[in-house]
Image (cartoon, rainbow, N blue to C red; front, side):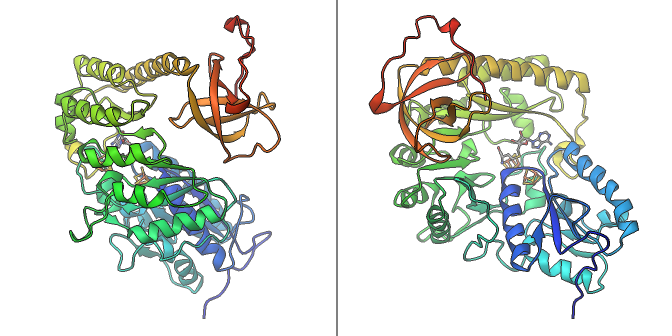
Length: 471
Ligand code: SAH
Ligand code: SF4
Ligand code: F3S
């Protein structure tokens, strides 16, 4: 028989969950939270009240891990005062560090890998039942995703994440993900469609389909009747109430004509696509083992843009990869301009133990990495500022996100291809509402939209005299 946590002071049967890392971790965090709530644990933000502390961690860069170690350090005192609290490290750091985590952080009770988190309530019970140091990492005997999504505790929101595959079968030399997340496991398309339907019935109008290389979806399944991302997009077209599908993240190598056509015919696909290039230098791409050259990336972009001329691309970049010369970096700046990304995430290379690149000398000084980071971000900002005003006079559909904080008489939303726009508030505006709009003007920061049917060109003769709107 298991004991319940003995509340000391104000502690109750509650848990504090802190999530780090990518959107997959956010999604898995929701599933973990639902599993805990189903067992009668309540979520809390209050560390003085919580009896269980769950850290859902990321290992992609050293900084992300150090942050968690810092926060775990703060809990040492709490555990000393109240040994009944349960501390769990879940996710990628658990997989990477394994049992070694108990040596560095002796007050941690549970180390739970990213394929084992559905069992976290059992593990907590094990600790409360007197077991010390529960550790489960690596591949799991059960599927991570339950046949039916448990929506217990889900906060009503128009957006939702849905994992379509887990793991990664590639081996980029800098990346820890394949070793912590394991090999690709695609979910069955029926289960995904069912989950999206359930979410749509619960008010979700925008889903973010998640996978480390989402365009490789299905390739691990038996050849016969093998699903693909293209067929999944087609199947989701019929889901009532669903307005938008975002895909996160594509790998250029898997993009083909069938996928581009499926995206183009889908009325729900958001034409705002993360397809990271990482570097604009062939030498660097080769040492990263990304599996493509800039010329190949160019072909994939051409194929996508031929099918969807208004497609906007998003990229990740790594600066300061071992051996990255000034010329290599300039090639990245040129690629950023050439492919005309709408948005970029720039990361300074961080050597990860166990990866191939860890053996390469980390020879770009920190300051140089920071300078390159800053330069790429500045260039991206400039490019986006040039792109957005060009949409004035065009039509789109706006998905309302929230009321603008600085200008509460406006709603902020994103166009079908990811540009921010403001829409004057009116009766019926709610987050998740899709509104057909004409993009009437640009205030230097966002587009100004007008509802399509009532559109009247506003008297904005002098754009520089417009009030500056911001969210
Ligand atoms: N599967 C995705 C990326 C997942 S990791 C893809 O292949 O595009 C998210 C981002 O973190 C990567 O795109 C990369 O830009 C960055 N990243 C990964 N490992 C890194 C490292 N060791 N140092 C710095 N950035 C890294
Ligand atoms: Fe990492 Fe590369 Fe896999 Fe992305 S594709 S998760 S960068 S190994
Ligand atoms: Fe981080 Fe793991 Fe995601 S390493 S980026 S949380 S897959």
